[in-house]
Amino acid sequence: MDRVPVLKLGDILIVSIQIDLQDQSVLALQEDLADKVVATGARGVIIDITAVEIVDSFIGRMLATIAAISRMLDAETVVVGMRPAVAITLVELGLSLGGVRTALNLEKGVALLKHLETPRTTTAAR
Image: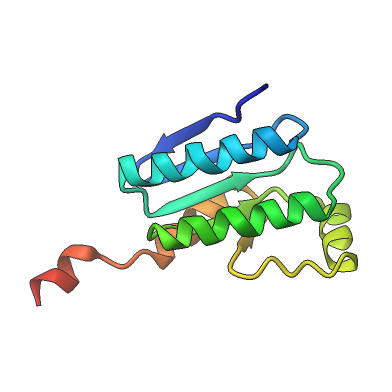
């Protein structure tokens, strides 16, 4: 089974999906990502789906589930690199991906997460 790598960039974790996701690889990704969010204290997760050409309800649910898990662990999720055909398919399937923010590319995804960031030290100091 291929595992999807999870890379760290500052307080952001980056997941670049380059393989066809099967049930086992998705479960492994969810677990790996949750473990890394906790271990690193990441504030954001970026899922790059640039290489994903075809999407089904399984992929849509997987993205929503990963976002929900990340939120529970205090990290926001941004999906980047969505192709127009993928967006159309997700809408046609009725998958709104609640809780998942999107950006056109990795650079815009990082900027979005940085914009959403609230300083922990400022809040704690009050």
